[in-house]
Each structure stands twice: as C-alpha cells, then as structure tokens.
Image (cartoon, rainbow, N blue to C red):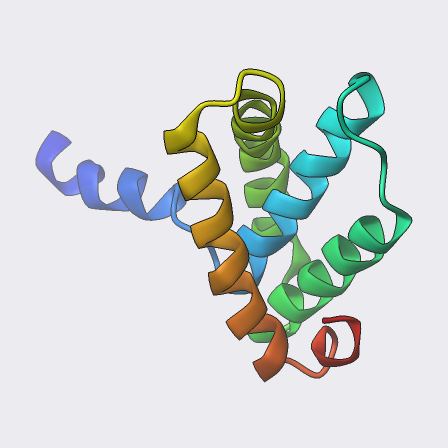
Length: 118
C-alpha cells in the first residue's frame, strides 16, 4: 500500500501548470521585497503574479484550490532564492532565478492573462 501512495504524494507537490510556478516566483519576490532594504517592491510584479495565478486557474479547469495551495507552499522558496540572489549575491541562485524568469516570459507570451503585462 505504501508503494501505491508514493506516486500520489509526488503528484500532490507538482505545479498545476507552469503559470502557477510563475505566480509563486512573483509572489515570492514580492514577499522578499516587502522585508528587504535591498529590493524595492514592484506593484507591476504583484499584478503579474495575480495574472499568472488567473492563467493557472483557467488552465486547471477553473479549480483554484490546487493552484492556490501550490502558490502558498512554493512562494516562500522563491522568496528565499531571491534573498540568496539579491542579498547574498549567490551565482547559482541568480542563474536559477533568471532561468525561471525566462521560462515565465515564454509562459506570459502564451497566456491571454499575462500577454499584455510582459
């Protein structure tokens, strides 16, 4: 029975869509900016996070619960990664952050909720 539960547990942690990952990044960035002297808050970033979330909900058939749960769980990791990049100057964090921004730019171009905000 444990073997049968493992795939379900792994699937529960997966992003409902790439748009949900992008929402988590932008919300996490905003979380860090709110408490940091090294990064200014960006109202446009919050708007983009909301638009990515809306796209993720649409792509998830209108079911917001898994999208919101994913964002709530993952945004803290993006806040930590942003801090590691901005405050500590960690080159690996910088690469991960910018790689995800590139992926999010591609996602934004493909979704009506985010296309005009790019």
